[in-house]
Amino acid sequence: EKPSGLKVFQPTAQSQPQTPPIKIGPIGQGQLAPLPGPSTPLVIPATRSRLGNVQLAPATGQFLLRKPEAGGLVPATRADLFYSGALQGITNDLNKSLKLPRNVPITLRHCGQVNAFYSPASQEITLCDEWFEKMDQIFKSAKTPEARRESAVGATAFVFAHEVGHALIHQLQIKYNGQQETVADQYAVYLLSGSIAGEKQIFAAAEAFGRLARENEPLTWDNHPLDEQRRYNIYCWVYGMNPPYYGKLVTDGSLPAPRAKFCPGEARDMIAGLDSDLRPHMR
Image (cartoon, rainbow, N blue to C red; front, side):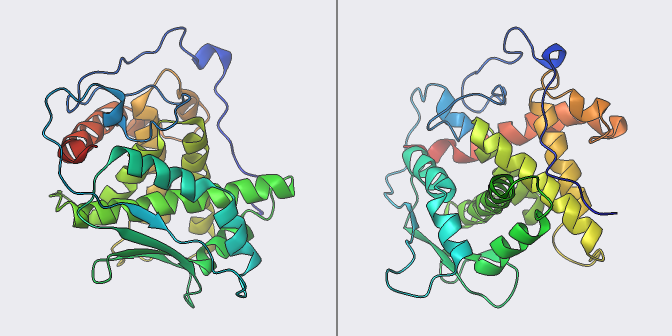
C-alpha cells in the first residue's frame, strides 16, 4: 500500500482543555509541561521553573553547529537542512539552557550510509547527508513540496535531538537504566516538547519510523528498538504528557488503548528522571 501524505495530528475542539491540565512545578518533581505551547527558548522542561538554590556546573562548553564550507560542492539537501534553521534553533536553545564540560561539534557530511551518530571518541555529532535524503524520499508522497521538505527536516531534527541525548549521556556522565537508544529517544521527545515547531518534529519522526517499518525487514537483533516500536513509544510519551489534549491519538487508533493507559506514568517518570539528570548542569 502506497503511504499517504504526512499524518499531522490535529486536536479537535473537544480535545483541547479550557485550562492547562498540568501546571509547571519545581525542577525534578516530574510535573509535566503543557504541549504544545509557544516557547523560545523553552526546549528543556527544567528551564520552565525557577532554579532556586541549584548549584550550577562551572563548565562553559556548547554545541557548535558547523556551517557548510563556502565554495565547496554542497549537496542541495544538506543546504536545505542547514538553512531550514531547525538544527540551529535546537542548538541555540540547548546552549541557553545547559553547560557542557567541552564543546561538541555538529557536522553535516557525506557518510556513505544512511545514518546519524554521536562519537564518544571524537566527541562529535554527525548528521549524514544520506539520512536527510532518505527522509526526503520517504515523504515524497506529501501533498506539496513544502510539506515534503517540512516533514523531512522535522524527522531529521528529531534524530538530531536523539543524538544530542547520546552526547549528553556521555558528556555529563549521566547514569541510566535500560537501553541507551530508547533513552536517547526519550531525550528527543523531552527536548522538543516545549514548542509547536518541536511538536511537528516529533510527529514527523513518528510518521517516518512508521514508513521505515513498512519498507524494511525488522532487525530484531539491533540495539535500536524496532521502527514500529519507536513510533508507538513516541506517541505514548507525547500522549502521556497531556492526555486530554492528545486523546485523538487513542481514538483514531494511532496509539492502542492497552498501551495508552500506561503512558501518563511513563511520561511522568521520564520527565522526572531527565529533569533530575540535567538539573545540575543548567545555566
